[in-house]
Image (cartoon, rainbow, N blue to C red; front, side):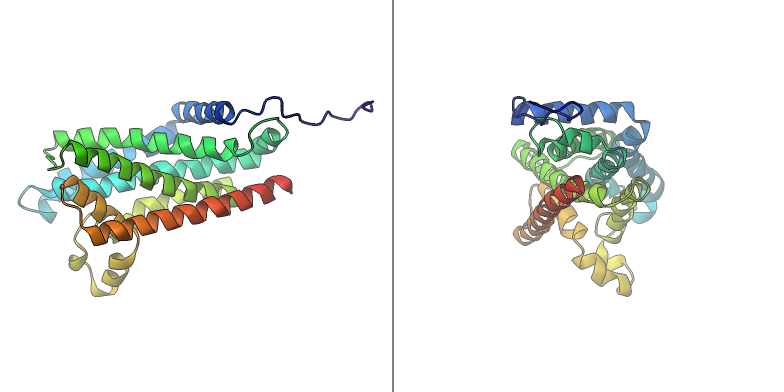
Length: 264
């Protein structure tokens, strides 16, 4: 007989991996639609950045009028990163508010909590790339990629979004809400120190070594090669190595930190 005042132990009656994960994905997507900050940073800010570079600075950087062809891959990767940074904030908010602790008391699929944040983040990032592409086309962007190349481009963007979102999920588990908001600046400013917006050989010598070897350069160059219909095998291998290794490390670290934080 259960003693009065003792809460009943959670049962496994409601254990449904697909259903639990789907419900939490829907929760995160609804949160995105209700947050002006997330809509602005995920959907509008990358497009605004591209307009500033193409319309205001483009003529000074490339007088041939084709700067939009060069800058779009960098903006797309920046867009994916900035959209992913919102996951750091939502995870940190859930941790601070005790929402994840309450989920732990429910008879639900335990990984669904993190999977809900990550899958919703990937979907949000891919949707955010659509207005960037449409505005770029309106500005005169005409990539050489065919239908098959575009399939590879979206698959590659999904992989980048998955890797970045797991990294920001880990940041949300380890940082406060205020600190998690600063993750956005990593994806906003670090791509500037790569080949995303200007060729690396135009940079100062002291910065060139970092720009050539930091992960955003091969990641952006791979997107540029796919959109041109002629990806370089060595660059693709380097980009995949960065994305897969960083993403896998973030998954393992996130699971370890999540279990320690929620069991504490």
